[in-house]
Every structure is written in structure tokens, then in C-alpha cells.
Image (tube, rainbow, N blue to C red; front, side):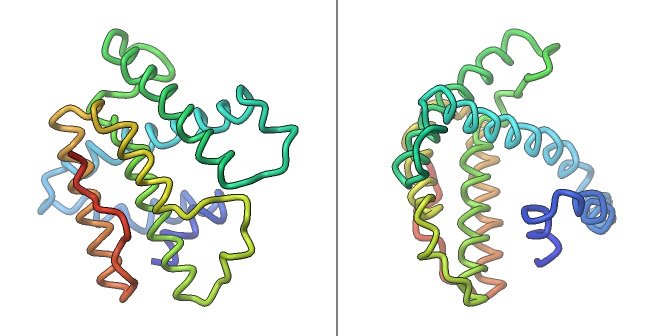
Length: 186
């Protein structure tokens, strides 16, 4: 688990981590399906993060001190941008920002991973109360669930539900409190 979370703390650790987990992803028991999802899902998460940062700029947040409400506002604007990218991806797959509509739940999955990361940090006695700039990840996930529920096609919803089960399983495996927000988008 520490190696997984190293990806968030040290960008240079990505190649080492990818090499470490590759044998699991290539295991024939999974029939290659995991590899068919991991790259486009990771790519879609990166597109959402870029949308989030662009939203901060568009909303004029750079001149203001960070606050949880600014992050939630940027998440909402980023979700709108992300939905536009997904819709564009339905028409033109030959763009640099193409996001397959099956990956439309990437922002939700990313937020669920942040929830897991927060729970893990709290279990390691890291004080998150001093971070006044970001709202709890569970609050962000709840907002994204509401904003994106109508944009998930059947496959995207299945991927979100599968990721939710995996994240909940990791919470259990690590002995962390269960995620706060319900995972099954309606």
C-alpha cells in the first residue's frame, strides 16, 4: 500500500511502482481486462486534475488564499469541463484530450482513492485538521457523485461500482474505517 501511495507523494516513483505491479496486471487470470482499463482510466484522472487546475484559474482563485469552498467550487467547474471533454471524445477520438465515455467516472474514482489515502494518513496519525485549504475527500466525492450521476453510461457506472468495491475492500484489508459516502451512484 505504501508503494501505491508513493505515486501521490513522489512523481518519480511512478515507473518503479508500475514495474512492481506489472506482474499482477499481466496475470492471465485477469484476461488482460485490467490493462484495458488502467491506462485510459489513469489518463482520464489526469484530464480531470488538469480541468480542476484550469477551473481554479478561470474562477480567479489564484489571487485568493486557499479554502475548502474554493476547492469544491473548482471541482464543480472541473466536472463541467470534464463532461465537455467526454462529450467531445464521443465525436472525435483523435484528439490529445480524448476521454472515452466509458471512463466518465474517473473523477469519482480519483476522489474515492483520495478518501482511501486520507483514511490511511489518519491511521498513520497524520493530523489533517491543519490542512484548512482542502475539504474532506468524502465531501468532494459526494459532490462529484451528484454532479456526474447523469453522465455515466452503463459501462462507466460498472467501472465506478467496481472501483468502489475495490476501494472499500482496501479499507477493510487495511483496517481503516469504511468510506463515509455511499458508493453506488443512482
